[in-house]
Amino acid sequence: MINIKSIWENHKPTGEVIIRTRIDEIPHLNCYAATNHITGQHLYIMSVSKNIAIPELKNYRFKGVEIYTLSIEDKIELYLYLLDNELKDIFSLFIQNILEDIEPTITESEAITTTLNVVSKWKKLFDKINFNGLSLEQQKGLIGELLFLNYLLNDDKTAVNAVSSWTSAERDFEAKDFTLGSIGIEVKFTSSKQPRIKVSNERQLDAESLNELFLVLYSTEAVKDNGISLNSIVEQTRKNISTEEERSFFNAKLQLHGYFEEDSEYYNKMYSLKKSFAFAVTSEFPKIVRNHLPLGIYDTSYSIEISALENFMIDLENIIKNI
Image 1 (cartoon, rainbow, N blue to C red):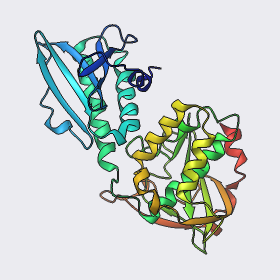
Image 2 (image 1 turned 90 degrees about the vertical axis):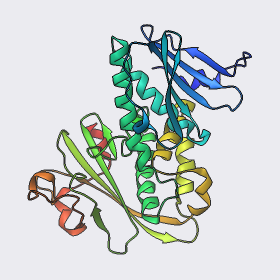
Image 3 (image 1 turned 90 degrees about the horizontal axis):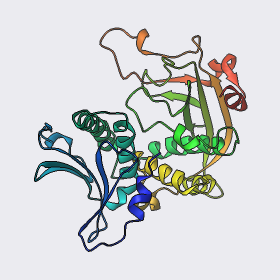
Image 4 (image 1 turned 180 degrees about the vertical axis):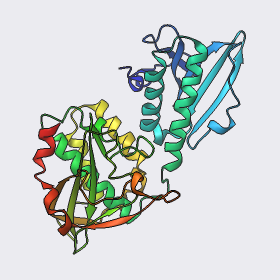
């Protein structure tokens, strides 16, 4: 795997404003990790022949990233320029995705098309990021996902791939909160006195394309002291991650969820964990999925009573055993 972040970190002043390092792992393409020596901002550059058609890039721009081309002699250079250094972890993940996808391409034209497809996907992700702080419900949802992420990190069987399995912010509608091979896990968090499962749309409990789907519910109560806050679970997770590369990956995913350190003073509300539930979402599980809905109905939200799910309850450990 190409570690573009380490290339950026190892850049030393050369006398040039833009310091660039060719990415040798993709020898058939002219790709560069670059740094603006004056501002410290990172770039990704791809240089192609002038006869390669690159579409108008106006619709590819998004918050924190500028995308443009420059004509240099017989070449065109495509620039992806990070404007906001606070987003460097997301940007690393973004460029890593481009490099992985263009590595098997053959021609420059194919590489440009593939690059712009990845850019379009990431624009959708960037557009979903809440840069104005997380609501209380969003905080609760993120705490729940991080509780389960720590559960995976603390098990030898799943620790290595735990961060990469956290997929809730990565794809569009089909992603589950966690995806481990052909197994999906949805995570819910409630502080209600009468625990129930709130499902936000018909896709969440749809097991299509998965061999198995599980649902985890953390039942909690709000407390003033000695509880779990979003800030505390973020720090706990960082400590549980064993490598700096994975920690950077984790930080990028936090930002994709809208968690930024500058807002941390608002994320200290605490909860005490009362009980954890786990359920196997089989075909008999009470749920609403796409193929059950009349034509024209979508984004269906609903709630499920815990008492209706006794026959589907399993031990949390059984999820790990099935992986």
